[in-house]
Length: 376
Image 1 (tube, one colour):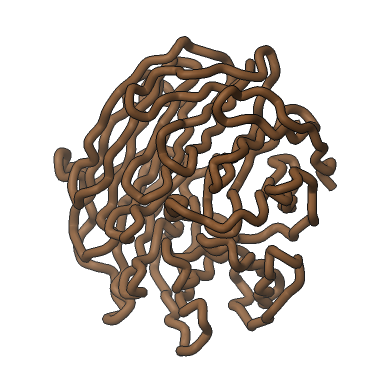
Image 2 (cartoon, rainbow, N blue to C red):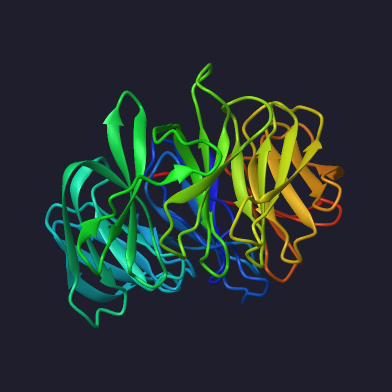
């Protein structure tokens, strides 16, 4: 059974991954400091989350399927025209609101202030409202087929992917104040072609919400995997695509605390890429090499940002973020399918098979063993 760690601790998002183009929930990177509480684990074979006490390493509770707020203070669950707002620390619903009957998914802005009701596949309508439920929602009705891409922190712009067929799409911006699509298609600054193609893997916003970075993969022969850097903090007719070295598939993506550095890893090809997203412009890229290892990596970044942890089919790698070289290896011969670094820097959690392992983040030695519940 394959597991992956969706998010860490009440204020720290640590890993995200998905298939299916291109409805990816953008997340802000984990903050530099957070309060130790819970680690949230999601089984790919089932829709629920498991809350792990980060101090004891034990499973505290099972949470329903849903969309977490970026800070993990709320979990949104939508069904049959009703939105339940769940407190992840207790598993109880703290509020219930009406939602559009056609919606089966809810997305959030990078700061969690705005909610977007959508369908899980291409659709022609959306609804945007504030997460505090203090104002009237904005209904968005369109001609065509669209999927959610992002929403600005000020609640003024909704970003959508207009599906064109054949795996191609346009990036569009809908102005929520005027109630209309911008007349232009958002294009890559270095390539005037309006059409895009690819499958979104994971998406993160910079800490200030100025940029949204999304990793896209492509089928063999259709071009490189790339990072799509969208200036979501302003109304701009451009984005920046940064091609990744190596294969067009097999990539995973993670954000470091502080909202500046992001990491893409292709473990099968031995590629490690660091991106600096400090400026509204092309992210600076550094490239490193590791020995190729089987299995698609799962990633986590230490609270101090100094170490990128990669779980692979044969253990855990601790990669120095300064040199992009492997510093330590652990769990030799054991397939690791989830990782999370505790925000106090004292523990690294790994899932291997049905075991939840607590590791020393410096030596990667096993400090404790627990179990995760089976998928329902």
